[in-house]
Length: 248
Image 1 (tube, rainbow, N blue to C red):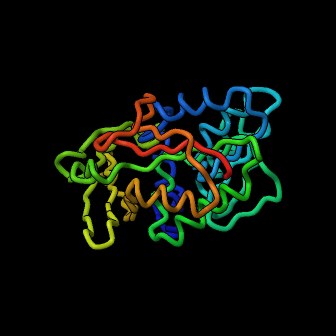
Image 2 (image 1 turned 45 degrees about the vertical axis):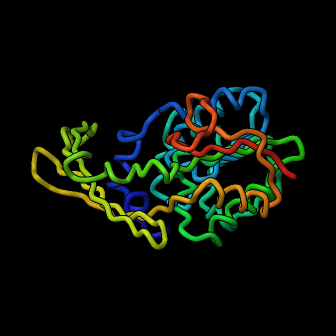
């Protein structure tokens, strides 16, 4: 996880906002942050959401991420000076303060590949959550097997980099049925000169039952399970598993 070039290589990190940007999860979380005065964004990445939340005066926003190149982008974006950026690992960071909203979005929870690491991240949430606070995170539903679409043919796309111009992007993927871990490659080929950047990543797809068990073990309780960022309830085949909860 800590050596994933997709986030730790500055050239690859520069593609993150192009591929992800402001999406439905950002809109949902911005609404959820209304009225909250302290927010911890674990796995904040390039800080697009954290910086936007900090624009609402009176909020203390802290963004934590293990990838220095991602935080470099976060610091330079508009509103980045209003966020406290911390280079740290969500499994182990301890800030000696609590927050009334803790979020872990963009499927960042899935970079934790083992139950031990997943539980450690949940315990970090519990350690920083105020008595009245709420947490929320997302994980892709393994029942949907979304990784099957991450083949070169199905994932091929053209994006535009602000400095490099047109870029052909695609993925390739392998799934380990024994561990549930998906290993996928990301490729970016620059149209103007043919240079290709690539990274290999691994993510886990914990089940609803596994997540529910670990959340309880971490001392947290879920008030609501969503199945998508459009607010739909969790069902067997909804694309996302999104728990919203509090301290036990």
